[in-house]
Image (cartoon, rainbow over all chains, first blue to last red; front, side, top):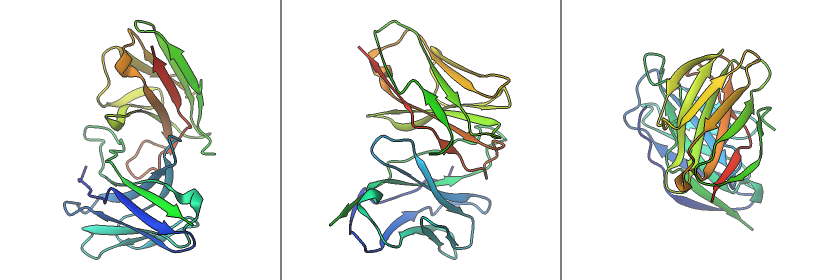
Length: 114
Length: 114
């Protein structure tokens, strides 16, 4: 899987947008960008994913640059409950070997404060 | 609630013992994944099953084994336990096991080896 780079920590004021960056400069054409988060030792929670186009769902928006070498997860109105570790993961078709596992890095610890 | 269930929530045992962790996937999901999260290693993929057959292995120790039953639930067996096996163990499931599938995680089992 393509390697991703994320800042280790970020702070955000409650009610403001949280913009979490991720670099994946070695991404290939068929690799998807997935975002998960983990709130204090709970099971990782799926947020959003995309291939080329920007995506939006009820939780967040995902902005992927045109060259696909980086992306940004946007939580439009962060709340205290959004405090978590956010993981950016690039997924490649693993049926040729290695399975379709998720490879988690160290993620970004987002702290939302009053 | 992801729809993936894991039992037990907590498990405390002694070194040298054997334990079994259980996972029930979301309704309709054919693929099950096991992950281990320890303080020093982060979230790591252990093994994937698809419709009863092993699909991929990660960094799973030989002392660990898993299986997926005809009703699609899965069990992870950990034997000859060592202190270092203390960790959170997560199960995830997805529809087909394809790399474009979203994996949904259960709440985890916290294993403490004394």
